[in-house]
Length: 600
Image 1: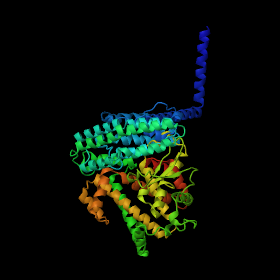
Image 2 (image 1 turned 90 degrees about the vertical axis):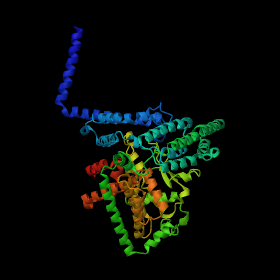
Image 3 (image 1 turned 120 degrees about the vertical axis):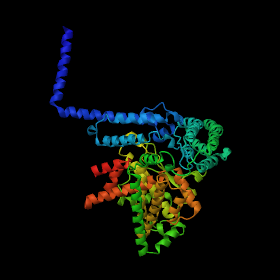
Image 4 (image 1 turned 135 degrees about the horizontal axis):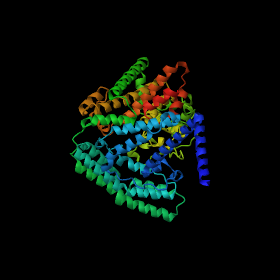
């Protein structure tokens, strides 16, 4: 009898809940919305944690304190690049897309809708590569894995002893990782997609430069400097770690670079295509995939070329108009390029407190923080530091770069300057704007302060990131207290250079331009030196779509701004426009345009 009553009570309770739900559809709908959003956020967080913990370098550069997110076990190696597993990535992206589609967009918050749109488009894009994985390339003289790895190792931050131990384990895995990449290159050779002999020679030259002085390699020098500053370690431990580092470097890392050289030389001669991707089977389609995956560009190559040509004509006409009005400005630009006229550029900026030649990068960044307030929202409170590239790294690094901080600390924010590049005057000023305010540092911190989902920090959105920094450059030129026409002419000169290189990129990789045709194209713009022509051609061959990240990214921001101005008329506000761009954050351009039109 007691059991019957108990079941009757359960049944009654269930019926009451059911009737309450039926009588209160708004409450039921709210619960469904809440649970859908929570489950979506759990799914994306799981995606983030899985990705970030699978690669030791990614983890270190993304999270300063992974244990606070529950990550206690993680790979302490570079991983093993297994070519036999490449084809399985299609299944991975199909599964992710299927999982995302289980969350109805109309039940998601606007932030989660945005994240879903970005992730779905990412899945669709990665599925486009299909079976073209033999066109992937992980080695190139400037941007390849073997070229970037020493920099990432040199800049690896030691916050605690565990970081030192993890770093040494990563270092010990370089040889295995390179072996797996070489295995992939061997498969590329058999498949007819191996690199040209010229590229082999250039990679070998870069690797040889790194291994040239094993008794005084810069990684050893930098390691000793960093560990000496770790106060929590005893002197005895520091010395033990230094000896171990030297041993691993000499017995594993440097030999692995030599093995890579030897392995590539054994394959030399099997690469039959000295030109761009269009010379390989499926190369045009792969180039279109790269434009989407690396640059966030989803228009056709033909439309991209039309947009570039239109901008080329517009900029040339504006240059012509300025020079007709002030023909002497052409000589001013020539003087600035030769470094002969930097004082006037910064006379007003110096506030007469010091000689312009003594203006430090820190001073320039402080000025930029104030000057951008006329066009951009006030920068979030943040600390940053200007550092100089280690002298042993100067020959291999960019003139300047911003090293993004871990997302859980948002510090340190470091802008590195390479003394080897001898930046000064306008070039230094605009470079610091690109890397600092209102460029990379400003954009990174502004977006991070919105507390976006963690997965957003892992996605490769180079078109947005580099496009934004390039978009801010003309503003930087206008902040220099000089003849506004001179500032505009200087920007137009840079814009034309980037446009020409972007057109050349599409010509080489999509239209099949060889060196002869590329040289004729460059000659039409006054670049007639054959050695210069060949170097430009080779750089573009080795790193397809790279210039388009910067320049087509810039043009998308420019076009979006003009579209919003036309739509809003006198109500358009540039600060509000920039604020919304920064809040939406890094994403593909179709997604950015959708949410700007929706909310601006």
